[in-house]
Image (cartoon, rainbow, N blue to C red; front, side, top):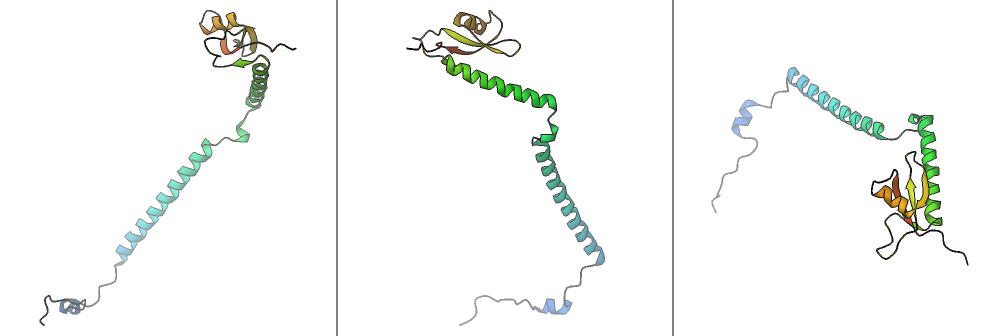
Length: 145
């Protein structure tokens, strides 16, 4: 059976005539080495940028000034107080539905203090007719039997 295609081997007569490929020149090696060093520098720089960004974005304990720490503690105390008021006065920040008329309201005053006020006073603040911010509407304290 005759061969259908001729296959050339790697050791073709043309390759044998020129001999092995020449060693890369010194200039070529320098260029490759410079490119490798450049790539390493870019990689190290990118990692540095990522780490610096993460470090700057993270909260640091040492960066909190005494004023900030005191304000955060005061906010926590105020939040706990509001939670107690919400429970004691049976409050809801979203209301109780159209058939329920609240008796009280929690109002945040201009100085940030939350007070129990009448529903009418809280609603006036909600509508912008009185100072303060309506925090919640309340049913009032549960009657004791």
